[in-house]
Amino acid sequence: MRWKLPPCHDSNVKVLLPSALRSYTGETQITAEGTTLNELFAELERRYPGLRFRVVDEQNQLRPNMRIFVNGLGVRDLGHALRPDDFVAIVLALSGG
Image (cartoon, rainbow, N blue to C red):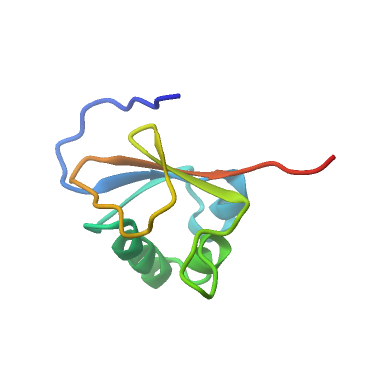
């Protein structure tokens, strides 16, 4: 699955947030800077305290119920490089039975 956004002329990464994280930002989509996912989440934590902990655990790994897509491709490595104008979607995986 790929998400497409209209062209944007800034150098920020666009971030789509699941509804469970919107209480931190008040927005569905935000922009942030970072050359890796780790840097991106560090900036998000500075701007929205507590958000990173909901996505990344104490061992600096993505929580099992979270999925990250960069330009539509699933990524689990927080060292994954980002480029200006990348689109990062944070998705809460559903579980249950």
